[in-house]
Amino acid sequence: MKIRLSIFSKILLWFFLNMVLLAFISVIFFQIQFHVPPDSLLAGSTPQKAGSLHRLLRHELASTPKHQWNKLLDRYGQEFKVDLLLLSPSGHKLTDRDIPVPKKVREKIQSLKQFHFGKHHGRPAGSGQKNGSHRGVSRFFRLQTQNPTRYWLGMPIPIITHQDNTIKPAILLAVTDSCLGSGLLYPDLLPLVGIALGIMALSGLWWLPMVNHLTRPIKSMTRATEEIARGHFDIRVNERRKDEIGRLGHSINTMSERLDDFIQGRKRFLGDVAHELCSPLARLKMGLGVLEHKIDPQQHAYLTDVAEEAENISELVNEILSFSKAEMTPDNINIGKVNLQTIVNKVLEREKINNTKITMRIDDNFTVRANSELLARALANLLRNSLRYGGDCGPVEISAQKRNNMALIKIADCGPGVPEKYLDRIFDPFFRLEPDRSRNSGGAGLGLAIVKTCIEACQGKVKAGNREAGGFVVVIELPSG
Image 1 (cartoon, rainbow, N blue to C red):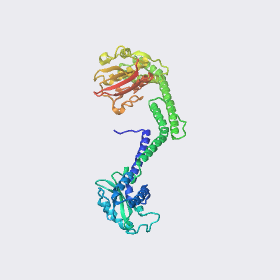
Image 2 (cartoon, rainbow, N blue to C red; image 1 turned 180 degrees about the vertical axis):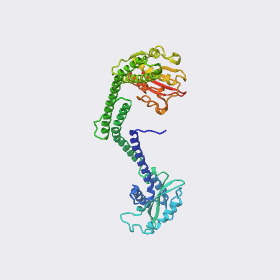
Image 3 (cartoon, helix red, strand yellow; image 1 turned 90 degrees about the vertical axis):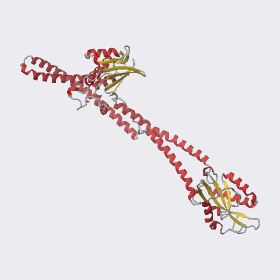
Image 4 (cartoon, rainbow, N blue to C red; image 1 turned 45 degrees about the vertical axis):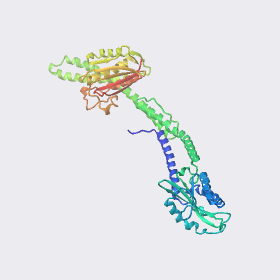
């Protein structure tokens, strides 16, 4: 099933995807720090922290006996949240620490040995140094090893021996299983997470008014166009904006006005034409009746054909008049509580419909709010339609039930039904299922259109569909009485 998202949801989703992208970039940033030169800007705050550790340990190692170096390394390791090791340039441990050093780390130390220590090995303390500074830390290295995954930071550190007061080279290693919790390899992430969440919250508060500014008028215009599609042309939208949305609103209002004028003109035209045709049709039928008594019996067949055509035209005009009257119903139509069973019985009697072809399941006291004449006209058209197309396949069923303060009236037959692609169009004026139904089997295509206009004039709704077991069903929804 294809998921449909609103513009509001799409913009918010795009925003959060942007945040996810930023988070992904941050993770990549942390990972590539193991593959950039130590003096690169991408090294972050590690050089400064490594320099601080280097200076502190260098002085304390010089003043601390060798058998206490483990405690000294433990104390600084806890402060920086890492394990500290002290190795010789050849990769041998200078302290008794039970932490294995992978081959990859030893090879890295040996490859840097001559570069870092060739100038200081065996040099007297203080030779070549000013104010106790040491530049070797500027060339620290970082590595990541697997099985298990560990993160390593190494830096050269000189150790002053008290016996001969000379500098002996060494490597200080910092190792951790999780770089995110290390205060040395990476900065503390808790403040960064708080800052990131704050930025996201502020960004959301910043974006929401803009998103609402864009989507709220679009929602209003969507509802307006849906009402226009249902035939309610008096709907209007706000067009005071000066941007593209305002121009769209102006276009919708203009379209609604012109459609209203067109529909009203069509109604007047149909009514005027139907009225104008009534008089000549009446004279034509009267003339045919007179002519029937004056022609030879051999010519009666021709006269019968002309009379049938005149009757067809008369039925068409009557349907057009009914449709015009239904659409021209005033807004102050008299709507009240009516008994549905009484209305149905009057329709059956007036239309001379055989009760044996009708199955009615309506309570005696079932009432709806409607105009009795318009409701009777709609039910008559539906019953004629059902009997015409499905009367030979089984009885026509009329049922009614109440649901959520609404009355649902169903008229169902056992006929062939209507193709699904035409269900949305069968209530349009003059629509007929050509060529599926010939002129002899159907009228002018106004029957269901009259039903719709009558029910909507009673403040109700009507819809049609096909029954699962076969047949056609129309559902009328009216306020419950």
